[in-house]
Length: 122
Image 1 (cartoon, rainbow, N blue to C red):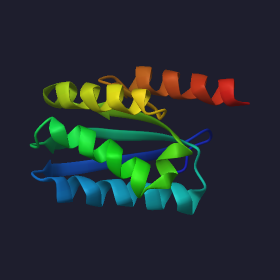
Image 2: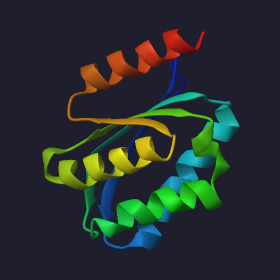
Image 3: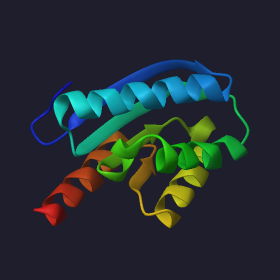
């Protein structure tokens, strides 16, 4: 959904392996390119990530090597409490690698952060 200041993406389902995570990543990247989005809010509260923590590191490596879209966007991600550990680990790796991504449990906080990032980039 294209909103006034950002692209809103909502996902659902279970990610049981890295291939499923990659498919979601590619879809997000394609939507970012299609809508020429620089700021994205991704709602993953209805997604369960049943993958090891190491896959978070592998995902960021994928951004660096194959999915250049992630270097151009600001990504605010909302997750459920059960997946907070892997999401926060992913966030920390992203920040160390220069990506502007943040993880939240609350949609209002996620939107507030994203809008602040948009204001700072103007």
